[in-house]
Image 1: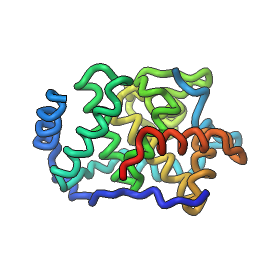
Image 2: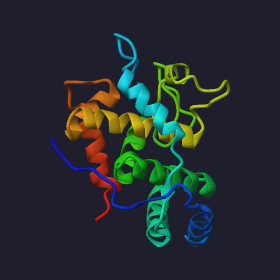
Image 3: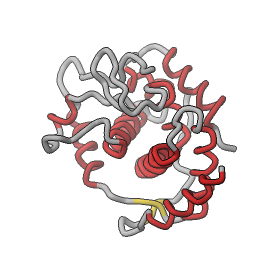
Image 4: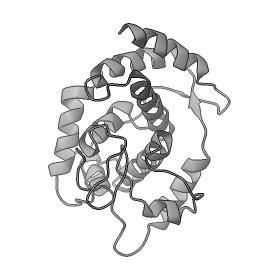
Length: 210
């Protein structure tokens, strides 16, 4: 299956601030079990190109430039997420970082939400039997590979989403836009379609935005 799952919003310079976006969305919102593993460590060593991309991602601090569109999106998705994340502050935090990190690598935020839904059911402290951690079930070996400071935490929402979105984008590029194959790589089930079908089914049923 070959789909174009790209950003619907423009990116802004790194100096763009989140504060007013956060306040606007928060005002509106006041009115209103993990999968086994994903992107396991390669059997023949770490992919050097993916490692380089993750290093660049860690240094990237870009944001968004359309406050109104982002606020509308946050409000809509927060209502959909309410049953899975009860705390409104945590719900909004997850959504704003999903939006930011998806936009940074030209993925649809809704696709990232569907991946999280399948991977961890939005349990930020989820740990798989293989040791993958957090919302997007990132493997801890990446922290050593990227020489991250001691104490870097994959349960930290922005850290987990930045690494997970970067990895998914890398696999989508590797598969030349074939989302089914890219999702299978992300899950570590290359050559099979069951995981991709689950994610795309959840995207269509729960997160797709017309």
